Length: 357
Image 1 (cartoon, rainbow, N blue to C red):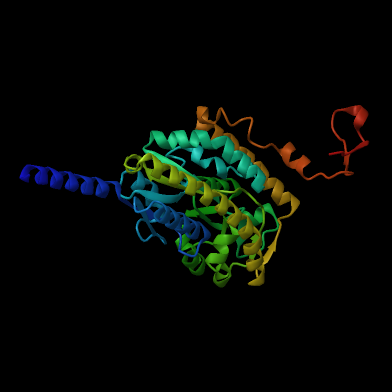
Image 2 (cartoon, rainbow, N blue to C red):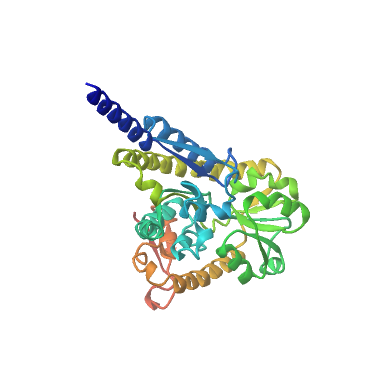
């Protein structure tokens, strides 16, 4: 009888310890403040997983770079210093050049094209991260990137010598190619950099400008050039992921899909509302002139070629999915529009056709 009781006690102890082993706690590193839509969305994701997992997985969020600063998050997750984190994708082109695909200027200037580009690149992105010990969960874009400046930008010469805040290799390169002087800074340093005169211009989202109240630091102009739609991604340390049972993994992925859909919708709303907030604060919100837009697009074409050379075989599967200038042109047309044909097709010069969609 004593032996049976001992065996029973041992089995009970084993069952309890097995249950404890299945209960995991993840710390989620977030670079942006709690009120930022990326952080708020990630917090909802974490809370949903915690609630729905029945105690198997608890995710605690740490916004505002309180656990790790933005630039350190990806490495911290990869090395297991923390289990999960959100990071600005294109800041890590050296980690994998494909992470820069969403920051090639003027390749995707609408949410529709940004989504096409994401779907085309996602399989390779996921594969590349997996090979480096990371499990990809979801990605959400920032609103379209526009040009901020303390002074009016009316010509290419106005860009020369501008002290420019950069945040990744794309913004550094666009500054170099347009004659601006780049200084790389994380978002948390923007306000101080503008107030001290360290920088006087930048390319970033209307959301970042609104959140930092950029108008309080002498920035008067926002040019809606829609340069690109960069994304934040959420990744998990692979060893931490493999500790989860299959049902919990499925739950996490399902909630990640929910967070991604919601995040894209929040970004779209912010793309409109946050530009209005800039205007309401007294900033001049508008477009650059045709000459400047052409200059930026030529710069983007140069950068696209340079990126393709760096990315090599990593982009071979994307070539048919990246939207072209022709795609953009035809997307602007409506039924009944007339197009004047010009070029080397001599029989058509001076004539027009009527669009039927």
